[in-house]
Image (tube, rainbow, N blue to C red; front, side, top):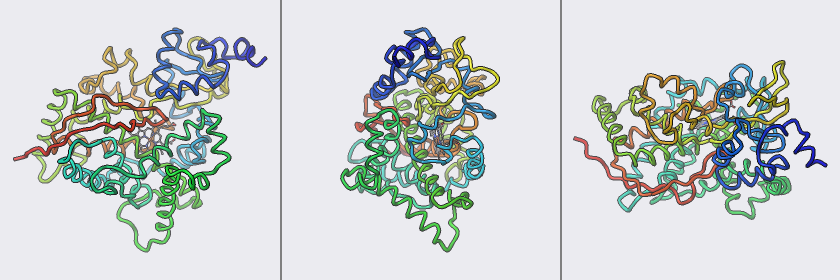
Length: 470
Ligand code: HEM
């Protein structure tokens, strides 16, 4: 009976899509499990000739980019889907809050820390951690290529942990001769499992029956996740017992009006949102630039000029003016989107119906447009939409293009860490391309979408030699 309803009578029955998707969420779970659902949805949009593909009994995957501003708007965005964001178990944090008013209040508390001025204060911290990473790369690269994905993950974890709660976890130098850390797998688990749990009934059930505190006693990876959370919680205790003000602002400074458990949840959440995302973009940047000799040459020449002008090293502000560096960063963000998939939203009850592909999607329908759809739309980016081409950011319509790049999402729920991410990307890429001669050793770059993209364990390997500067 339910099957007949979903196929023929359901309000979404007029939207095309695979029959199994209309019948149950199992189809979508299978697609997610394949590793990169956006590519499958892209094919199916073509097969069914639609801009609104039914991918679950109550869900549409939309490819009409003109609707992005409606769904993810600044003034009146469609609300986040509670079940999806609850699966991250960071209830009521700025990321997971589904109530618009409560979200606004929380975001207001955090905005000063993440403003351009706030983030500029982080420059010494980013430089310090980048230098630590660079020195280690220089030392261990004599023994062979380095997995840059792991190196950048260690670096971004150390930056964000210090930024979020005032204590660096210390992954860069955890292992003396490699970028290896027992916490990297734990981080993968912490950031990817909620997504899988949302789609898999079995995982959901296991998580419900066996809390992390118990499961951690049996599974080594879960034990590390538990330990990682413990470090964060200890850092909060250290923060409350501190006798002097730390030189850099930390997240807790801005959350004093909240109960302790909410401050801790926000710090854990920030730590997960802010580490692998930037590391993935840095890895993407290296992977593409090192394959394109002309791009690499132009970038290095521009950077050499900027470093040559500076008395010691160029500041973040100076590096931000290097147009070709900015173009490479934007292109790495566009193609290397760390969060490529749909961010699920619910169609609200409003005076104007929500019309997509000429049909009404009724209130309560789950909808979303992915960064993948927006960032690779040939109508916007041209026939080379899937190629790495920094020059596209140097033309007269570059500002216009920014409106279509949705790597950080848009509107009221867009990423709060944009300035942090740009600062890390700018400083790291500038120093790495100025100081090192790099050669890509990996032939391919395999990643899976688990809400955040994860580089597969095979990694991305690069040979490093120090460049000679006169
Ligand atoms: C290249 C790096 C990054 C990318 C691509 C990225 C991407 C995103 C995206 C797509 C969202 C929207 C998620 C949703 O609606 O479900 C988001 C939200 C968020 N991001 Fe980022 N992010 C990055 C770096 C960071 C950093 C460095 C931080 C913190 C230091 C951070 C913290 C957050 C937070 C707290 C939210 C929730 C914002 C809200 O709902 O108000 N992100 N990010």
